[in-house]
Amino acid sequence: MSSRGTPAEYFDEMYAGAEDPWSFETRWYDRRKHELTVASLPRRRYRSAFEPGCSTGLLTRRLAQRCDRLLAVDIAAAPVATARQRLADQAHVRVERMRVPDEWPAGADARFDLVVLSELGYYLDDAGLDLLVTRTVDSLEPGGTLVAVHWRPAVAEHARGGDDVHRLLDEVDGLTRTARHAEADFLLDVFLRVPPPARSVAQAEGLW
Image (tube, rainbow, N blue to C red; front, side, top):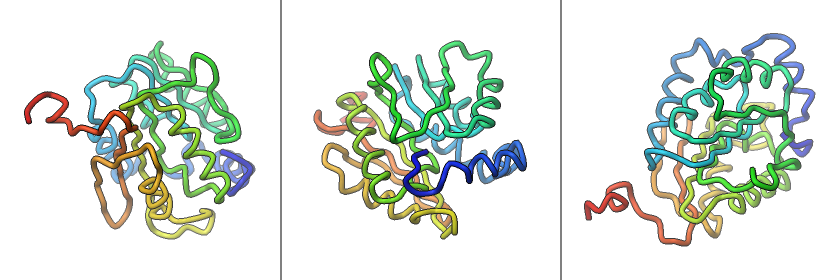
């Protein structure tokens, strides 16, 4: 996470108080949301994926089943250590500590056909969110998938609401939204990087 918005110390303090401060490992809400996130992926398989803000790696574990290569990063040392342990048997997954969006994958690691922004954008102020979106779109290969998932109710520590994050993504040149799952609790949107023109799952398989 960037220094623009919720400070990094907030996350260090949260994880210092508990290994799983948001109870991701025990709540049915989070397990169901993670399963919906992975089920929303329009491709059966991805070549190279990026998950910034991976926390302790629960969603990462599910994404790993659909990716040939997966880079997962988080700002705080404690969840990175937990995620590395959780993914230790997945040789194609790399977990790193990184302060996004100020820091971003470079070189051979800088192009992806899948980026997953899960519970991340609302921690950033305007400049930070703009940079996150710009770098995400620039990193996506033509036709690549962006999945965004964000909590909707107001939270004092968030710089904005989840709906605001998704409204911004809806307005970005180079992205076309192809699917939306909306509940009172969270929004889940799937975008494709255009051009080429976005196609549905059935269109991609030649069904129409």
